Amino acid sequence: MTQLQVECVQGDIARQADMDAVVNAANAQLMPGAGVAGALHAAAGPGLAQECRSLAPIRPGQAVISSAHGLPNRHVIHCLGPVYGVDEPSDRLLADCFRNALVVADQAGLASIAFPAISTGVFGYPVPEAARVAFDAIAETAPKLVHVNHIRLVLFSAGDCAEFQQALSRSSLRSSG
Ligand code: ADP
Image (tube, rainbow, N blue to C red; front, top):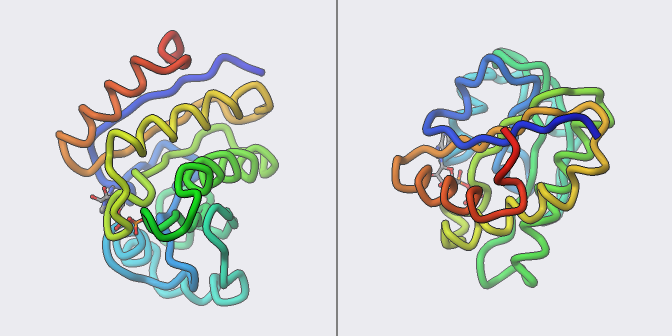
C-alpha cells in the first residue's frame, strides 16, 4: 500500500480534471438522469450512454467501468447505490459501492478517483450516515490498493462538504492526506 491521500472538496463531479476516474451515482440502466448521472452524461456526451448500454443493468452495490468520452478524465466508474430503507441492508450495499469502485479503479491501474455522495440525493440516504459508511469502506479497502493513492469526495453543497469533512476527521483515515 502506498501513501493514501483522502480529501473532501465542495464542487461538481463533472469538473474534476485532475482525477483519473470519476464515479457516477448511476441508475440501474446506466442512463442519464437527475443529479450526478445527469451532470456526467451531459458533460460526457451521447457516447457514454451508448457504451453503457452493453454494461447495464447493474445491481445495488455493483461497480462497472467505462471510458470517459467528453469528460476530462480517463474513465467513469458507475455505481448503483441503495435506495435508503428499500434496498437492504442499505449500509452494506453503500459500502459495496465504495469498495467495488476502488477495486475496479485499482485493477485498471488508476491512481486517482473522485466520488460523489452516492445515494444521498434521490435515493434518500442521510448524509452523516452515508459519510461514515463511505470512509469506513475506504479505510477497509485501502490496504489492498496498489495503484490508487488519491481519493476525493466531491460534495455539491457546503453543508454536505462539512458533514463529510467531519466524518473523515473521525475516521481511521484522519491522519492521511
Ligand atoms: P442518488 O440517486 O445515488 O441519490 P443523486 O445524483 O440524486 O444520486 O445525488 C447524489 C448526491 O450528489 C446528492 O448529495 C446531490 O446533491 C449530489 N450532486 C448532484 N449533482 C452533483 C454534481 N454535479 N456534482 C457533485 N455532486 C452532485
